[in-house]
Image 1 (cartoon, rainbow, N blue to C red):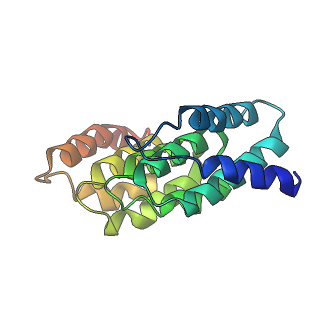
Image 2: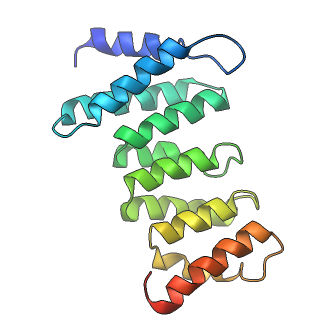
Image 3: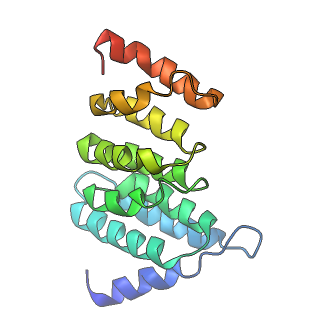
Amino acid sequence: MDRTWIRRFQKVTNLLVAPGTGDDTAVRFTVNSAARYASEFGKEEERDFVEGQLLKALGNQSDKDIKTFLLNQLNLVGSEKTISAAKVYLTDEYLVEPATQTLLSIGGKPSAHAILEVFPNSSEKCKPTLIKALGELQCTGAVQQITQFANDKNPATKKWHCKLGKYWRSGFI
C-alpha cells in the first residue's frame, strides 16, 4: 500500500474518541469495515496492511476503551505479528480480556507461549482469564503453573482450574 493510504488510515484512527466524549460511530464503522473486508479469504495484502495500521493505532492510543476497540478489530486480521503487541496488555486488569480474545483468535503455540510467559506476574484478577485461555489453547505446558490454583481463594480462578483439570487428567489437553 502506498503512503497515502497509510496516512489516511492513521487519520481515521486518530478520530476515535473515548465513549461519552463524542460521537465516533462513523469512524468505528469505517475501521470495522476495513478489518472485516481485509479478513476475507484471499485478501492477504489488505490483511497485512490493516493489521499493521491497527497495531500502530493501538500503540498511539492511551484510552483503554479505544485500545479495547482496536484489539477487537485485531481479532479479525491479527497474525503472529500481533502477539507481542497484545501480550503487553495481558497484565492489565482492564485490557486482559480483549487482549486474550485477540490471542485466542490467532491461536497456536505462539499465543499460548505469550500467555504462559506473563502468567506468573499477572494479578489475581487477570489469572482466571489467562487460565481459561491456556485451556482453550490446549497448552499442556501450563499444567504445572495452574495446578497450584486448585485451592485458590478466588472463586473464578478455582472454577477455571477445576474445569480445565478434567481435560488435563483425561489427556485431552
